[in-house]
Length: 363
Image (cartoon, rainbow, N blue to C red; front, top):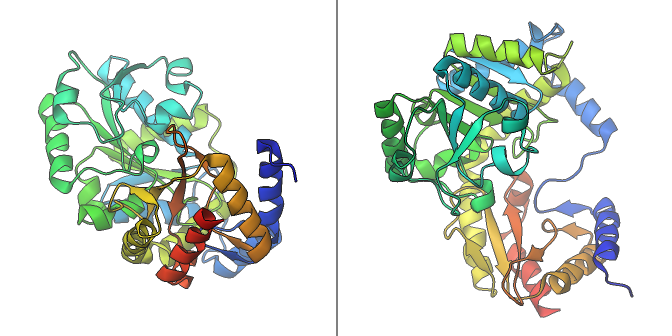
């Protein structure tokens, strides 16, 4: 049986389509998603270019949750963050923005900050951890904005402690530079930080949040902050082609996620801690340990193609989906994947999850 990387990708894709049980998110058929939207819609009024209906209701809900005067719904987080950083740059009269070297802003957006907005990136650090105040202080001169990604996904979903976050925020305030939070997964961060969404958001000038990750929305993002900043972001949303005639399907699914999934964040974080501990007893390693959010990196003492083959064979045999594909860890004989706890995970027993993953090392 062929086991090339391309063959494994095709086999994983086919196996995933036949799965009947999922540890993390499942791909819901389009027709089922549309039926669900019809069942959970709460406002019959359609939005028009972002005004009215579910979109306006969602913006108010986000502003209230984050304790900010205003919020705007945009089709993508990329657009949201480009827009607000451009606003800060224009206001400050400088194009210099301090960013973590592993931030999504730099690693997954085709260099958009420089190519589209001509911003100059100042890297505070590229280590797999949150940046420190002294690293920000080491960047001299006038800055338009400072960004923090909470949690830092490419670093392993790592967060600062609450005290570290407060200190970093105070450093920005003392320097007179706006702090912007890349909070694509901010919903999942409050259990570890031990403070509410509004308390976290109060440490920053503006906050971006995403709806299609653990909340399960179709797509979309929101940016919350001062009314004048949000008003300027709306202008950039228009300039960048994001002011769609209607966005209501995205808003309906986002509001549904806020109602049904957001209240589960403590449970999902606790389950991540329990699962991480159980998997370590099976011979795996996790990072961070314990997990800071509902997500963490899982490391296995097996080469990537070997454990990926075992994972795909198990999917084909059991019709259960455990994780994303496995990748080389950069250490000979080791591999890693991301493990994300979602509401579906709560339907599994912890020892059942550990046993399932243990089979991947035993085969």
